[in-house]
Image (cartoon, rainbow, N blue to C red; front, top):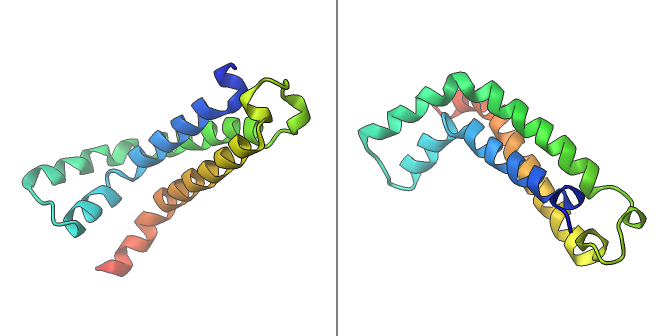
Length: 116
């Protein structure tokens, strides 16, 4: 089974990009909420200029993942992983979790002032 047929690579890339997009803003808040502190947390703000690039990469990766995950099951070969209903369902669940992460990364800077 090739990586391009399952959509797994695009899904992983979208998840990583979503986490990186929120690392500058959401990361320090989560770390402080968990009781982890230190002067080094301020260094995460250095990722702020790259946030639009990370979000763009996440959205592009999600488009490719959506194309692979939501194609008809008939497009898969009988021996491929994408033909197994449990795998298709798991990929769809992970897809929507990653989509939620991207939504949080997009909305967080606008919601953040409500917490202060």
